[in-house]
Length: 178
Image (tube, rainbow, N blue to C red; front, side):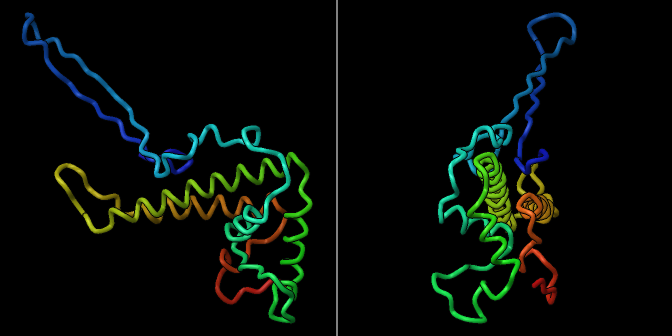
């Protein structure tokens, strides 16, 4: 089972009968286990802007935000027309990443933490692609697609929060925004 955040969970139910008593008394025990793809991450409910630092984004976080938003690597030097600086939306995105308010920095970090968790879940779901059935377990054939769709949705939400269109990595092929 997958919740809204893309975190997988399983529920095991065991039914046993009391054979030492008269009648057909049964006992049912239900346990639930969170099988999140990234055990080092906090539970999805804990990923909120309130739980994130509100300091300015680091260079690493800005690079990660660009990647999640579908934009290519920025590079370290202005290299002319082929540089990211040639496109106005790239420059606006860079300006926006560098000038977020403290509350916006915390919110951006919450979006990026969610994206990181969902990206890890997609990769973990891919590890079962070589097995179609094992004992009573059957592979969910749409799991990777479903998880990737949810991951992409959160990436687009990050773009919407930042006020920039999704980058080339999130758009249809051949679509250019200047």
